[in-house]
Image: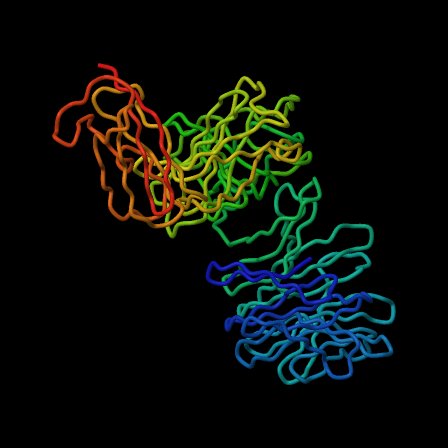
Length: 538
């Protein structure tokens, strides 16, 4: 497991060198983060992220250190440390925190006023939450439920005294509690989850944490305060089961925040999502490697998703009729049938070789079936999709997919690119590729003119591997020079479209139309020279 930060929309991961796992649990407004890593012996060692670099942090005299919080006001770190005898205590800054008479003391959080919150374990093994006031006084509180706790931790506390805690009673799952110790703590559970764990609470009382879906996957969440009406409306859960492979589904409930292709893929654990663009009647796709959030997810619409394993999870939200400006039609029935055929497929990847790819598109063709897929390039990313809604196979292992990159003027901007479909591609319903040297041919080449035969004009495509002066000479069958086309200095690239290829109007040097028959055209570019045959028919 690796730690991560998400600051100003920038996602970064961190893995302490030589560690088994790395965790962050504290984040400061200055960009610092704190936590611990697990070394090769399974011990927890404190770490601090500062100026983009990881630094070890061991509380003095400790053999294990865990950082759980940091103060924006003082910069002090808060957490737990264990000495050589195995006794665990808390700390904040350089102060040792030890509840009187406790066997173990956990320090979980310190607020802006200097109040320390945590829990302690007495000699009977009982966990009890406590507050350590700035003057050093301790106040204990009663846990929210009866029973013997394996642990009970207070992870956050707002200035208005609302807290978030995690506790686990013996024989039960870990639960999260939100509220005040004087007014009462109440369980917070993501509808449809098997376990909900909150690790932080913001000043607006929003809780951040993760929950486990019935299929064992872990998802992050942010729970925000809402009106009673909103809470009642958006607390519905609809459990969905998907079979391994391709499935058709729709979203049965309105989520609290608008859903995108990215968030739906995260929820389902899919390798790709495909939808039909109503305007163009073409399938469009999104994959987790995309640089954006993809298309919006709407109610009453069907989406194709491919999952690598059986899935069991819940959609949470309000009925689609909750919003008056949203169509109240019931969503499509969710289908989990899994035929043997792969009836939907995506070819996606990135282009390299040019600074921008505005107006570019990628055309993918299955050479066995001649089925075509077309996608517009977004930035430097593309995802071309195809599907057969009657669920007949669109691709097989061993199929060869040919890719062409087309520029905004219709010019072909790549070599002839082919890729073979593997069993892994079939399982994911995705062929991922990286297309290099777009707009940069590997070698000089003169291609066949078009149309051919022609009357009276034709275009002669070519490609240059480097900048050069280009000359096209046209001869008749006797070797007589009929016309010379001086194209000047041309930059390296593909010259295939009518806008870029060499053009001949079928006239000689004197401006006279030439007779029907066979002619030859020769392209000269530096040391390179090539000749091809063409035919005029009148």
